[in-house]
Image (cartoon, rainbow, N blue to C red; front, side, top):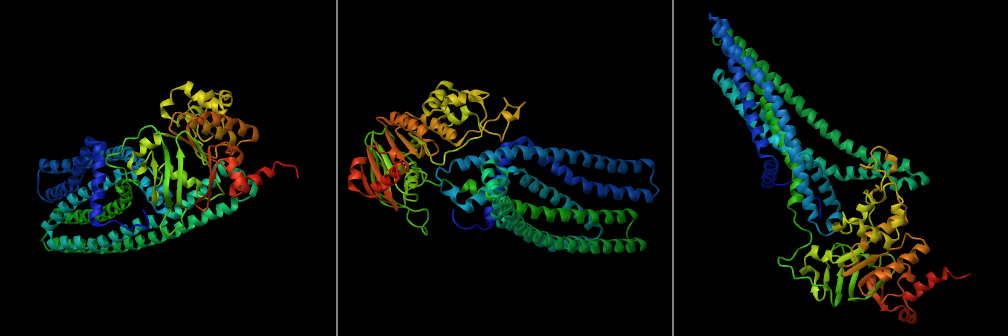
Length: 609
């Protein structure tokens, strides 16, 4: 997705409305149907009340007996009671629909996000803004149903009141209705502006959230306090907040002007109608009941028209906002899957990069340029090079987080684009340089490497032992069931929130390695800086374990510490997205090229001066 995307077309709004209705119907058919029935009943009661009021006043002004007074009076009372009961029922049903649809919509939204198998969309600011608005819309999709049924309710009430007033004075009915036309178009324009405003301030609010999160999370707390940057970051946060406030204030002022203008117009119409009714009654043209009906009907009709116009505008705005949800749902996969994926047998020959070129966008520089590389089956291949050389990008292509811009990546001669993405990734184990810290238990942190081991404590412990983290985990307050976070309170710690444990950087890295070791039977193991946070002794221990782990298996090792890769079967040096040399350690040292220069620089740090 590229570029800022404007409001959807009318056809798009209809599709969005249909999607919201489908979600509500799937989430709760009976509740949605009951809500519709109650809405229609509630819409009819104001019209019934107006007529009963007229009949009551006519009876009072004549010589009617007591029975003729009781039934319209009782009807008015019953209608009032009905409004009270139905209004409460409507409130409950509205809340119930919101609860049911929000859960269903959230599930649908993140199911769609789960279908984005690559990384491109998560690195696109426009998409992240749209996803944020989609998440907001997913919290209350029932409001769209409420707006739709509220619109139906207002239409029924408005038509009933309009017809009732038309019986007394066709001209007054037309004038009262016509007074709502300017407001209709003004509110419709405002609704589009409001939706546009939300899209406009979304990047601003996302930056505000970013600064606020920095100020309130432990990850940044050390640097912020040491460097004294809290006032600077707080200033940035407030500046973004002020920017959003300026835009929202301008929107509120426009809305206030429209509401004041319509209120004045409504007062003029109501006052004129009352004067006309009084004069007509004085001339004997209207009964007392007719006058009461005019007063009640004009007031109710103005209120109904206002509700109708506001409902249309609100529904229009909610549709525009919900269109972001619909857009995420309908955008489709980011990486094309083959209709008939080729079978993915166990790796036998190797993985080949064939004339691979890659850049993140057409207006950005090439990250990889004509890379040709074979990772033979059973071999350990190491990638070395300076930061920005293209090592991590090559790993992203290998995991098919992106597809090459030109060229292809082949698995035993089959292009990765012809394989199932899920099946390909099931064949790969990995430790990434930017490994995750999950605010979960130690057991869950490990088992996320292979969910089949979620309830398999022996496998978790075996992986932890190989990563050198078992003894630490076993010493925790609840062992493998200890929550590795101070952000939440686990069930085991609910009476003592202080027992949540935070690991050191090196311990987290070992935990990430344990997560990877759960997948030790995979065809390919990727180790991207697997020991960058470890001390020298721990690094030696881990690399010894990794050597045993990858013995006879296909592996790709990336490290800036060249001593950790010197025993690889093949070492490949990348510079500026190109392979500049390849060979074993001794061969590359003999060539006296980039690898030898980097190796000597690192070795010099361990030599006496």
